[in-house]
Image (tube, rainbow over all chains, first blue to last red; front, side, top):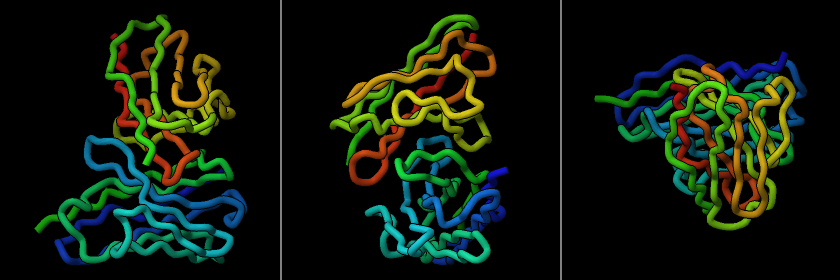
Length: 118
Length: 106
C-alpha cells in the first residue's frame, strides 16, 4: 500500500539546523509531487513549499524562503526538508504529503514534531 | 493569498445532519478539498475537487459548491466523527487552508 514514513521527532536549539526525511513506497515516486505542510501546536495548517519529483525543482512559500531547502533522493523514493538557523517559532509538527495534478493531498506522512528551545 | 474562512466549532448529536462551510476570498473554481483531523493524527482526505469522494470514505460525507462558497455535509453524523475539519484550495497561487472547524458529538 501507499506509505509516506517520516523520520523521528527532533529537539533543537535556536540557530541549529534540522533535516527531516519522508520515505515513500507503494507508488511511482516521480508521478506525484511532494508538499510539506506545517502545523503549529494546536493550530491550523500552512503550506511550506513543494518539490517536483520528476525534475527536482523546488518551490518555496514566501515565508519559507532563505532558511528552507527541499531535496530528493529519487532513487530511494525519499524527499527531504532541511531548515537552518532554527528559531523558536519553527516549533511545529511538519507533514510531508503527496499530491497529484489537482494539488489535493491524498496521502500524508505521520508528521514530525520539531521542537526548538534553548 | 486566497483566504479561506470556515464556520466556527459546533456540537451535534449522533444521527443528525451537519453542514460545515468554507468561504474563499476569491473564486477557486471547484479546486476545494476537505480533510478530517483527529487529535494526534495526520489529516485525512475526505472530499476532493469540491464534491468527489475518495475510495474508502463513507458515503455519509459529501461536498458541494463552486466559486467562493463550499459546504461539507455529514449525514448522519456518528460519534467517531469528532474531529477538526479543514478546507484547502489549490486554484490560486500558493495552496491555503481554512482555520478549521471543530466538530463535537454530544
